[in-house]
Length: 144
Image 1: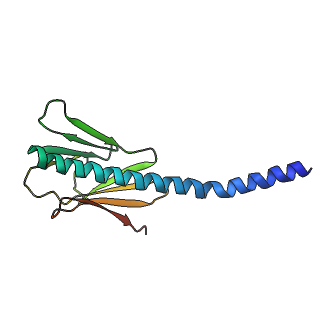
Image 2 (image 1 turned 45 degrees about the horizontal axis):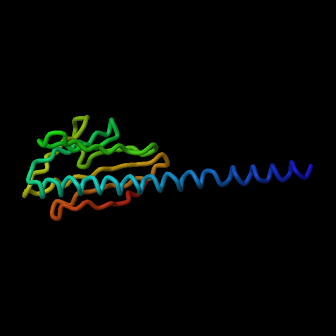
Image 3 (image 1 turned 30 degrees about the vertical axis):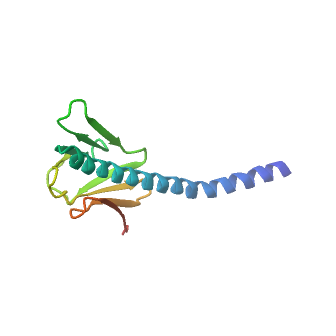
């Protein structure tokens, strides 16, 4: 009888703690994904400047991925979002659906875009490219 009480208490504690642990893991995944997107965008800008070549950046919410292409043979980089993280929007929003394609030119201004990602619990973050500096920065989005 004592053993059943102990097992019941352990089961209740596990049931209470599981949602908090799950939300914590999703929060870590979201932070990691936004850091990866920021690094990916920074690498695209740096490559365009250092190699003096045009870089095509493709952001595909449908495929939940980003890609870089250039005229250099064999060059292609992809970044897929981890499980539980989705690319919700590319800001500013456009009327047409589908992947957003941008060209990063050496010596030119960087497009002022943002990539909004979210996890399963509704937490959202936006990675924005600063058109003045070319550096990405991450913002938390307040949920309403």
